[in-house]
Image 1 (cartoon, rainbow, N blue to C red):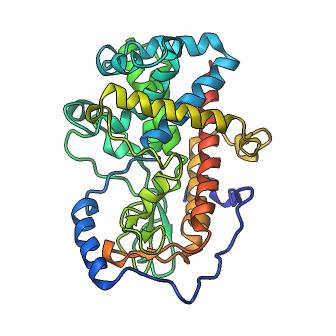
Image 2: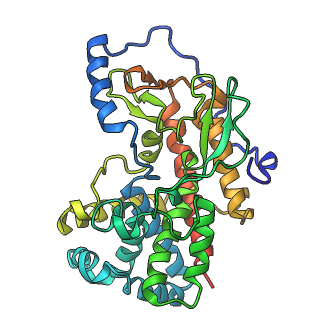
Length: 364
């Protein structure tokens, strides 16, 4: 259990507790189609489902808003970080080509957006061999529901990196975020600080995605569900199955499902950035997302942020263990009425918290 979790039994503002009644008649896919989709998704999603943490667009939203708010509060500091990012190993090539498709006066903001998504972009070769750190994207706090094996320990269950995958020895998200926070403010070459800044922008956001903080154990998932990657649902009856982790990753800007930088043209990525800008403008005007006075902002320790995500996973993601999910794609269960709306509101609040906290992390 994360430190202080017993004190962090909070409810998201505006999120009703409890589970709405499920209709006694819920249409489902026919058995033939369920079998077909099950076969397809077993190939695509099992067992190597990636842990992305929001979407590419969600991370770019975070980068855009962090840049804008930091510029308002400390323009000198944001200019310094932009200079650091211009020393990034991928600025001279891919990043500069994307910036060339967009207004030059917004280059610094674009760099923040590309930096925030970069740790997911480096999953693709050839960047993968040098920069990918799979275990940095999540931390496995045990989330126990009735029927969980007694031998499963409480607290963090460390990931086991592949050989050479984590030369820094961080092994999990909280440790990796703390490591990179030290590096961005340390006496390192600008290129290394730029890479570390990408990780800070990305991991602070990942830590606020509840399924990046837990591994759920229960009677039906005695070996854990890998942060929802092995928990299959239908967003609506008749939809193709997806896993719970992917569903939560895509609560923000779900209409943008772009690929990585190395699989897209600069023009395609510039188009996505323009869409994120439009969304960010609306986001900035929403009074319900003004974090002024939010009690969570009093918590400054990374372990406290993780504790919030663990509690959100328990109360909202899994509805105190009442959420029904399938263990395989062909066993996917339709989500209960109202679940998607509650998830979106929770995701929006978590994203806004990560933005506000990142602004403070990046100030002197």
